[in-house]
Length: 402
Image (tube, one colour):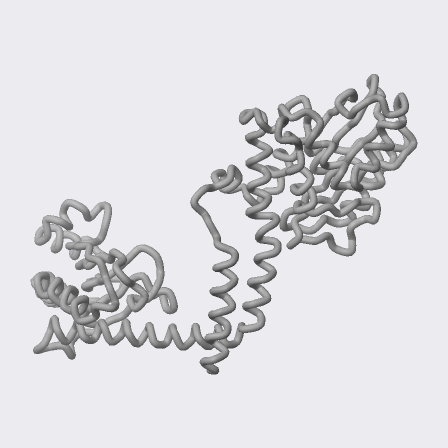
């Protein structure tokens, strides 16, 4: 492994995260409800924002959607068609529907994410169809059939083309199957337009809350990540082999560290009969438990007994610098005889056997930099509880002789 190349990779990654700090101190609404990538949830939010009768912001968000669509040209032509442009969009009736089934055309009975009807005196003068794609691609002939149905509705009502929008994050561009009648608009473009809504309109905190929350959500998940993820992925691609080699070397060293630690604990705790003891830890590459035992204590299907370190989360002991771990004596009985034997012998187990399989337990802070101190701590703990191991030997002799 080329050390200079590894240093270069690390410096580049450090530089990236220095310039693009990640702050997760506050959650957006979709994060709270675990819906940050849920298309139905986000589509309902958009439908709310575009609905002037509900959003408290009037037609401003919808006007910004038109700007994102074609710079506002379509809206301008629409308004000029009525009394030479004397009307504003707020003078029209706006209806916003979610997941409404088409009643005609190729998409009959299929449902588009958002339908917006613009009416004047109960007459439909424009229809807007929005298909929202966060991570998924479109279904079979989805936009083709949607466009056919929207076109039929538009031609029958006002003899003009409908407005068809394919809304997506930059990291999820439309595929080649997207119908040409649908205009692809990124969340970045939409958000940049929504942010230009006049400040005085957004001054009412109650009215602007859902808009501001949406802007923050989109910037964190659908804009920043779209660029940043591509950039960090490219950095990783460039240094992939070097980083994989470094990870392999790290795992190998950390595993040897953990193995050496357990061997030293055994030597310290059982100086006269260390050869009788063995150890194990796992899961393989991301351990969260480390065990010391006599092989005869592990008779799977009958009984399992050991001295153990365990912690929340995965990772080698070598990684720990002050994190809490549990030192424990653990019995995992597989039969009622073993349960009864230890229940009579350990008050802790008698009180907790229905909840846990620990005979005794103690929490300490583990610091790999204080190796000898940690070896001493675990060995001392085992020394104070050797009588449980003796008890296990007695049990095995008695149980197997019978």
